[in-house]
Image (cartoon, rainbow, N blue to C red; front, side, top):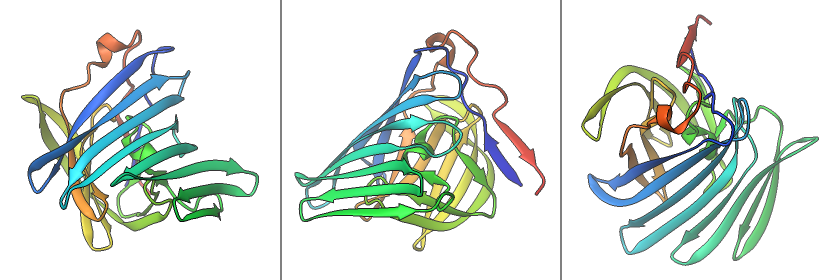
Length: 232
């Protein structure tokens, strides 16, 4: 089966901010905010701010910004770990994707052919832009390292996620990367409701704090049907 999450039909210049609580082993350690601004039909600007404190007094911050649509788009991510900065930039070139990684001790550049990866760290948190397919090998370009994370994806089926006392319907996937199972749950409108991510070697979970009120934020109705399922 193929799962296609439809793109959000934002009214011009509409902005919505989603806030997530980040936990490690059930303890809150930080937060993530995802700000989505309409740039026109099927094109959005997504700004992501993440901040958290991991064990051994490891403080992490990240500001990630880029365009979003139905396909992966260029982005820039500035990361800071224990006060040490790094930056990952994804750009387009005639020969394919170009990834620049700048760290205090090195500057690197890699070029990937079109289609080398399916999603990016940015597109996975974009409400409505991700395409997931049960049974696929999901390849994701990491905004933390500039490397490609790869592993099998399996649909777990429909789930309910309680967000601020409201039960929201979603579809759950399990993505296995380097032996770790990372759950990705998207709501009926394409909003990421709950998901796991690897942050500096630690598996953290992020859960939406409040249901998005697209109706008040946007002049137009939020989305068309969330998914289309097609036989392969």
